[in-house]
Image (cartoon, rainbow, N blue to C red; front, side, top):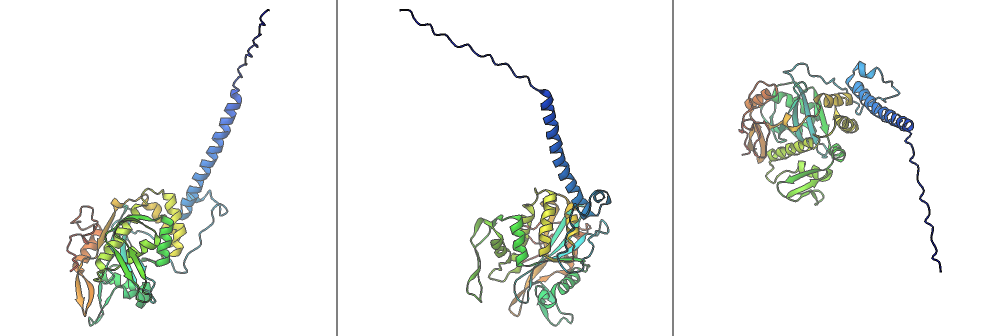
Length: 356
């Protein structure tokens, strides 16, 4: 029997397709044009924003009103043009954090000295129990009560008298604005140095309840942290915590692109009571660039603790207050910490401020 010889199928020889380089080149050209168009659009959008907020004619000339909608003014107040008149005259801004009491009190006060030409900021914390003498020297009051007595106008006038300088600008932040800011910028990872508990006398519920240790502070917990007052009514330590949190918050934004910072200001500025326009605030952020914490110095108004009729006041030292102001003008040496900052134990440039 003959073996069947199976015929092997012939292999099909596939012809190599020729690369149609013409089509490839055309596709690449189209891709480059598309990407270039997108990139150019983003770049022109950025230029338009810069031109709009900085008032640059060159940048704004190619942008029509249909391209960029003008911002709405957040507050019905008269704004003051934000400008630094000379290198040795920084921009002074009073930052006030008011509580939710009725009438409200200014329980967080900071004098900001912003030198946009030298790219640095000095932050001077003013303890909320700082003693303010009446005009006739017959009575005293705490500086935080100035807001409940005469709002930001009286508060600003008192701080101007304290440092003997005009303060053209102010920003007031209430509880809602503070929490909106944290919701926008994100929760903060911080070490809470001790257990913090406070019971509200009207509700008998804890309005501050923080455990000791490293934790993430969302908007509610962060607000508890900055408003907590120690059992001994020590406003000095609260000012330290407020500066510590402010330093942490600003430090968390160091790697944020300038365009993102502009967007944050745009979204948040309407929540603040201020005489600085949204456009000027964004322009200031642009001028300062990617400022980091090495260019921000933190201080606390020099003084000592004093008890009057059972109440604890912060009796500030007027001479050292002027020396501290001199640092913001660049004509006084910084002693103490080499970077001029306050850590958890120091409050002034020379360490003479004492808690008791």
